Image 1: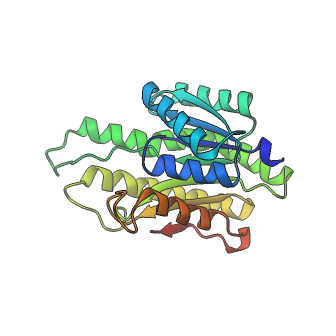
Image 2: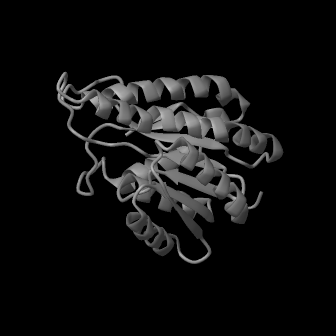
Image 3: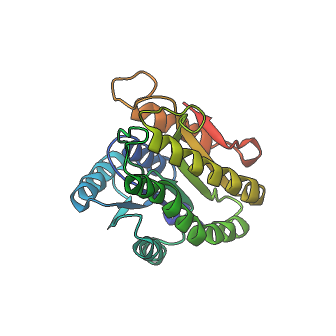
Length: 231
C-alpha cells in the first residue's frame, strides 16, 4: 500500500478536533479521506477546509447520515471501501456535549447518547476490525488503527454532564476490550483523552495542539504504542 492508497475515515466530522486531526493526519499520511456526519451542509464546509489545508492531491468524500442508523452507517463504510479502498485508520469523533441534570435528564436522551458513543462505535468496529486485521497481515508498513476522541469523564464524572460521563465510561470499556483483544495483532486501538473544554484560545486544549499530540501518539512505532494519550 502506497501513500496514495491509504484511507482515513473520520466519523463525526466537524470544526474543532475533528477538522484539526483529520487535516493533520491527511497532511502527514493520508491522501484519501472519508468524512461522515449528520449535516450535509457542514460536511461540505469540512471538505473544503480539509482540501484547503492539505492542498492538491487529497481526495475527500462525504457521507451524510446519523450514526445511530446502523444500516446507513454500514452502507457508508461499504461505499468508502468501494470508492477509496480499504481504510487504514478510523477516527471516531462522534458525540453530543450537552448539559444533563442528574435524575431530570430524559432517559430517551440518555439512550440516544449511548447509541452515538457506544452502539454506533460497536457497529463500526464489527464491520472494520476484520478489514484492519487483514491490512495488518498484508502490509508491514501499514498502521491499522481505531482512534476515539474521549476525555477524563470516565474516571472523573461531572454530575452536570452525567449522561456524557456515563456513556464515555461505557465507550472506554469497549475500547479497552478491543485493545486487549486486538492490540497484540497489529492494531493501534486507543483514546485521545482531552482533559478540559476545547477552545482555540486555550494554550493546551486547542484543536491544533490536540491534533499534534494525537499524531505524535499515533505515529510511534508499534512496540512503543500505548492505549491512550492524555492532553
